[in-house]
Image (cartoon, rainbow, N blue to C red; front, side, top):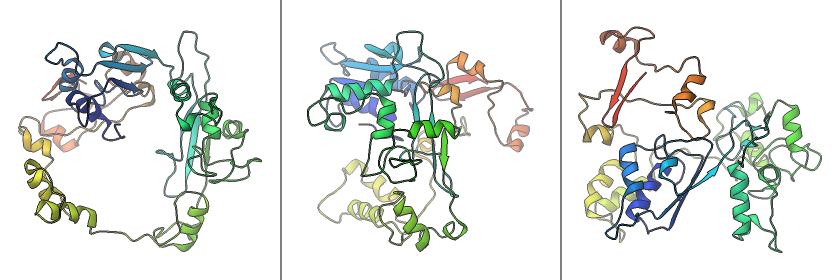
Length: 348
């Protein structure tokens, strides 16, 4: 299991057999041999590594993708996916929704094109696999499939009673928000509203939310939080202090000796700044900048930001940097430059 934000480590862990060896690595949506890898070269080494008997250390790789991304050549089985124009998607209230501090919001994407080739939405495939494997969340008591497809899942799945992937137009008549029974017309209501829903907090709810009684009670009623108790902001992190104390020798659970100093140094209970570990390990004079990337929509199919033709869809895909630094380096607006790292270089 690779959790979001750490899932780029799942390939490395699978190759190392950490915490155990696996038979199948199944990936979808994320082009992890390239775009989600911290080091593409090392990731490719993991995907191609063999053991003493000559067998791959990751025996089987199954991958779902809409394009011939960088991960495809390393997979044993490809499940051809749809693009975001050909399937239902859910920008869910449960997972990185479109809301803001002014109020919650979520959205859907609806299919506007019918696939003209042998492809299926990866969400539909996962739901069907869950039913075929007999997983409780995807089967009814009689063993039949609980959900017909992803659209059915969006409407009828409940994380807890009354709380599902979408917060808008809940309840049998669509009058509830946040918490309510599944509404069979929910997706149509979203379509009629431009494919999104939002709720605006009142002025009385909008400030000091951690201790605002009105906000806390309404947020609980909408299913945004589990309880309406005041939220105590912790500047001092007791869990981090427990790790530090363990590194200093306290308690029965001790960190590995090789990691003891790292745990003691970086598990500081108070906010601190430190040089990123990668910068300590490499020559910062050769690579003094850090680049942060963000994918535009056309590159979200397989997270393939290096697919050249996807780059060409956009009129401009700029790299922004400090004006003072750029001028000091003799770089002018709209210049083309080589962007280099310890792994390689790309022109942009």
